[in-house]
Amino acid sequence: MTYRLFYISILALLLAACQPEDTSPIGQYRSAVAEGLEAPAAPTEAVLGIELGIPAREFFDRCTALNQQQLITMGRGGTAVDHKLDTELDRPAMMTFSPIFIGEPRTLQALELSFIYDEWSPWNKSAYADSLLPQVAQYFHHTLDTDLIELQHPRLQRLFTAVDGNRLLALWKDDESTVKGMITDLSTLTGDPLELLQ
Image (tube, rainbow, N blue to C red; front, side, top):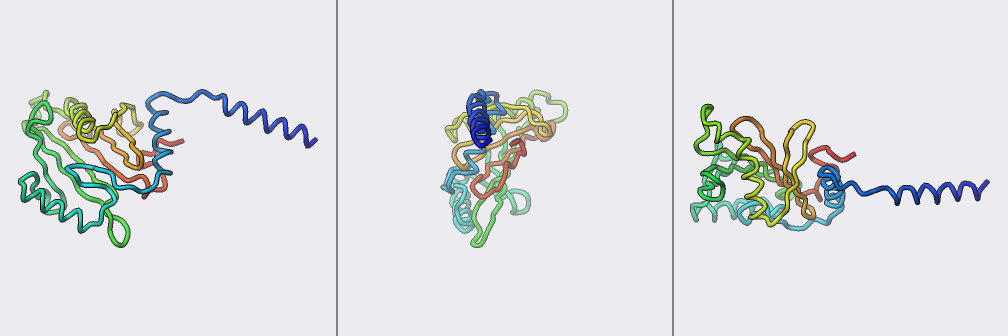
C-alpha cells in the first residue's frame, strides 16, 4: 500500500511539472506578481526620481526640490502633485500623483496616478482617455525602462501593467477624460492589488 501511495505521489508531481507554462498576458502577469510578492524590499524608481520605499520626509524633500526646479506644482489642496507633460506624449497633458505611506516611520508604499490631456473636452474625441492610455503606457516604457503587457481586467477592462522586482505599475482608463494608475511596492503587500492571481 505504501508503494502505491509513493508511485501516485511521483505521478502527480510529474504531471504537475509537465503542465505548460501560461504565456498569455494574464499568465505573464500572474507569474511576475507571484515573484514580486516574494522579492525583497528594494528602492525602485516611480516617477521623477522618486523611489518607492523612501521615508516620507525624503519624499517631501524631493518634491520641494522638484518644485524649486519648476517641474511640479501642488495639486488638489496639497494632497497631490501636478507635473506637466508638454512633449512626452503625443500632445500636452497633466500627470497628477498622490503618495500612499505605510508604517512607522512612514515610508512610501505607492503612488496613485492620473493623466488627462490639456485639451480634453466632451466634443474633442481625439483627446479622450482611449487615445491617452497607450500614450501613457509608452511614456512609462521609456521613463522606467520597462516592458508593459496589455490585458483585459474583469473590472478595469483594458489594462497595461509591468512588474519589475517588487515594483508593480498598472494603468487603465477611468472615464472618458482620465487615465488612472498606480505604482506600488509589492514587498509591502500580502496579495495582488489588482486581484488577478488565482
